[in-house]
Length: 136
Image 1: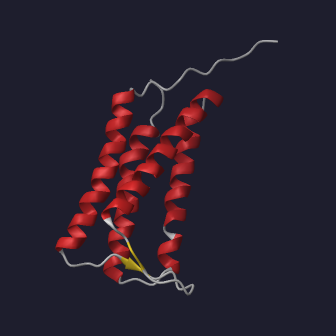
Image 2: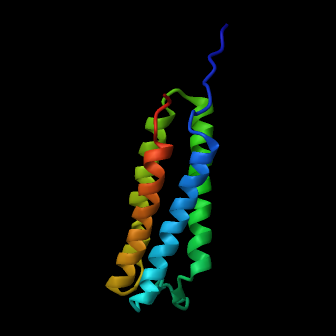
């Protein structure tokens, strides 16, 4: 019985770290732009709880956690399959699409929803080209 070894990704650690940093910076920049434009990032979950304000620390923390989960998923897939890039990219697109569902379910201004949607797209735009890269 032979075992096949799947080599780890060739995406350098520095590139992955810069990608995560770029995604975090992009969402922080969008949050800042919203503040400059006077867009209040307040969402009402319509479930009886008080509306919540999307703060900068919340934005940065959620972005960082999502990016690190994406990184971990890619690393795990690299160890389990030779099709890690394809599988990861498909999962990333599904997660991006699913991330828009809460925007449809909450009460918020159109401007707030637009900024929040742009944040989701910014993270995907940073992660997918790098973490979805095939081994060279």
